[in-house]
Image 1: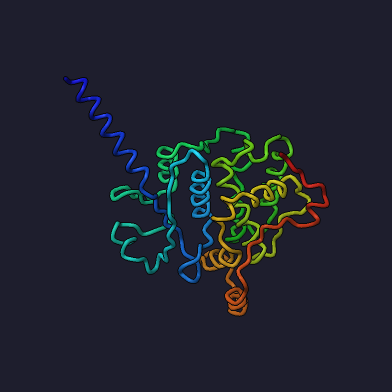
Image 2: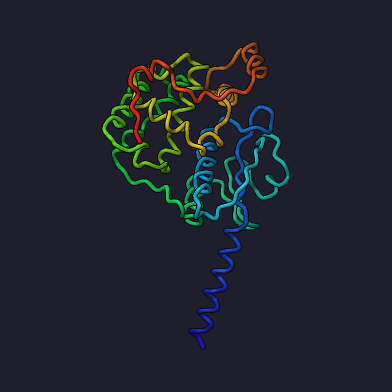
Length: 273
């Protein structure tokens, strides 16, 4: 009798799990300057990209929606569940997560197909200090871009010595979903606010970015150039925009810099796959 009850309990729990996975996941991301469009936060871009990549797999049962939120004026449905910052994730009536690692762990656990897990110490080492160097430079903790350039060179050299399309495989992994938005942020934000450009002679790096730009999950989750610039310009510890430049950004047609410089291509950009 006990065995039968245990089996029934397991069946019941499996049904509950099936129902919960059929409910759409809701991802909250920072809103852009108009309060509606995607904001320029690379962390929101990363998690949005993960959800798209998961949902595109033919065996995935992940359904999700994305809502933008102005954290200064959050809607009641955001505020009343105790949320204060994005990114945040809701699933069903009880599951609420607001920490990056918790969100990613939950997505992997509940929606394991496809697996985006990555265990490659060489790739991790090659990317470990990249965003820290960017942050130090844009916040003017370090006024010399050399440290950032050296990290980009380090990544370029790693890419030169692998035979996969992305950092550790021929498909995107969590490390790619982390690094590609960061590289794009470096390109757009530093170009506008510091006049810094990723060196054109880093052909392996540009080839990697080109392959990333071609991915549907990257494009659909990517904020516009204008929103990336505004996101970083509005921080208290980064260079400000002049009122004239800000007005120009608001008036410009929405732009997405997914191209690769012609000089980088002429320099025999490294293609794979």
